Image (cartoon, rainbow, N blue to C red; front, side, top):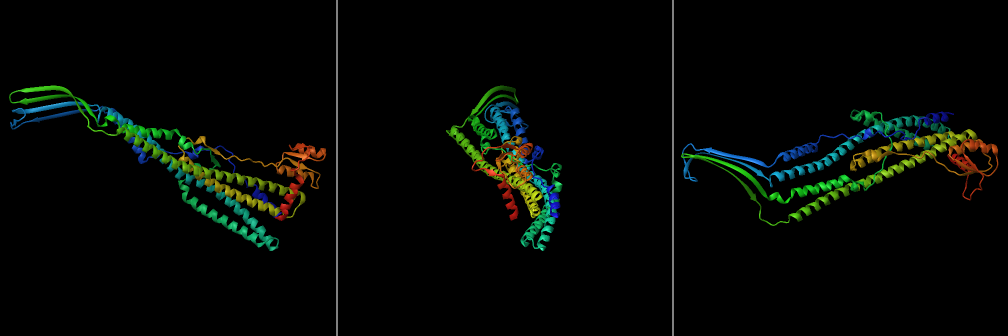
Length: 483
């Protein structure tokens, strides 16, 4: 009777951590950081605007006054004063077209810096997010350990009492004692961590029960991303712009005004002209540009290969964790079925050791929940790394909650005349979630009772590999007797 009360109290608190609600994507929200890269982006903006407004115009002025009447060897006269002004429009090197090239280059470099800033923000987000989700999941673990410890304390008392009556072995008592100790120690360690980081946790994570999430992302998405293709194109344009043919050619148009005053006269001479200079050399400019582009492409591909290798590693680890979750869920359903069947057998046949077996099943379910929560923490770690490596900014399109199949069915099952009561057989079918059966005998009342419970009944001839209900029940009784 005492074990039944403990079982009922614990059973009301045991629930597999399903994700029934939609994902709150606010937990993945990234904030832009003010880093040196952010300031560098601002500088590129300002430089681009400055180059666009610079038309390559230059004004030069020169004047002097001769106070001592020194003879000017150039004019063989005494020049009292002289003034020279010139307006020059530099068109190629260092001028109009060069500045337009620099403005375009600065904008392309800004695009590359934007991508670098996004990567920096993702790294900062992942480090902060790790602190946040660890805190939220630890709160679930704390609640779980508290509930588990209370159950293990009562379970230990029952086992200790049975041991004193020499009904069980000492090893069973020691095993539960060790588990109780470990549960308490785990709880203390987690609480110590929680107390030290609580002040750094946003309100969103303080009382948030995070869902079980999964990633639907292809390992080839990094190479196929338009962003990465754009980066290659931007780098190629930058190389071409910085190595344009006129970068060493100077050509300008100027207007000049000279005014000179000597002892005997004053005169001025306005003029216009052009200046041109170019180095006389033979180079491999086109080959140099092509080689630089190939080098930049190879570097980018090498970086992407490294990211893809990391992504593949995390995606494989992610799939392993998801498979582990499905395995634990299947195990949970099997134990849940066995608990139900054991309860039915206990009520119908009054088997003496069913109460202790129910407590053992309950303890196993506590262990499953603990493993699920630990897997959830590992899953969030993997997902955060995948988000960091992914070139996509919109994570809504590839994150979803883990869905489980909540039923296990072993149909069709054959019912023959058996020594087991119809009520026991019906309860067993419901516990096993068996929806279709085959009867080898006629029993209108039993048939109507089965149909009323939504079970399909047929009278087909059993196949050689057919599963018989009496065998399933006998197997469960045999399992119980071995416990």
